[in-house]
Amino acid sequence: MIELNTETFAGIECLHAAPAGQRHARLPTVLFHHGFTSSKDVYAYFAVALAQAGFRAVMPDADMHGARYNGDAEYRQSHFWDILRQNIDDVPHLEAALREKDLIAEARFAVAGASMGGMTALGAMARYPQIHSVACMMGSGYFMQLSQTLFPPLVARTPEQKTQFAERMAPLAGYDPCMMLDKLANRPLLLWHGEADEVVPFAETTRLTNALREQGRDSHLTSLSEKYIGHKITPSGLTALVTFSNIIYNEIGLIARHQPVTLQGITSGSITVPPHYCWHWHEYCPAHPVD
Image (tube, rainbow, N blue to C red; front, side, top):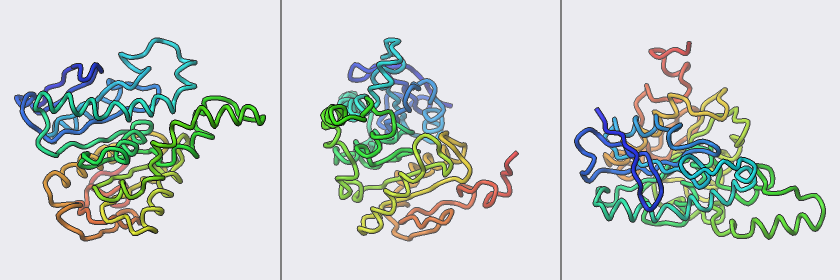
């Protein structure tokens, strides 16, 4: 049983889920961010799954989304990267509001998200050392480069347009995780991506995984993918997040054990996952066949 409510933290409307009877107790807390043009309510299944596993899940609406949406779709479409930056800036304010209410169990504060929300989680990890662990699902750690092709704020063909584009995107540079790989290496990090993603290419996660490994910064990294999956979260992707969080907070995973295992052809540094949590669902989980 869980409790699921809509509450305001730091002036932002959030979905708040916790195990039944523990809404006001100190709990390991996951701040989860939704994707672009979506909302906290659409991603409520993450809050349910995390609360059922014993966590507090807090899911804010991004700027220009959900309860914060003013109906101007055209304006929102051209401000993806501004919204992402605002998301990252919101994280410490949301954490402070939760701590003021004494809702977080000590240092057990994690940030996670999907798509734009996953990028939010990576950007927050790069900027805020107090975050315990991070999960990025179908996101990217290469903001400045990806902004050329993913929801660019303006067309940049002429030299003048290119100058305008560079000026518009300049504030994002200080948030770009790829420029701060050391900040992604010292805490547990889960990367998950569908290999057939048609919106945020799977190559974005492969690239970040390889960069961390080539620099020897992958001791706390778990990088997982799922074949044939586009830009969506699958049941096994949801399980990946909950399992990762459980292992971390039970201190039997990335921090306490450093025993690499191989999942789906990717060697992950120090997370031990039961066989039924493997990510090629139909290959490794005959007890759970694909319909």
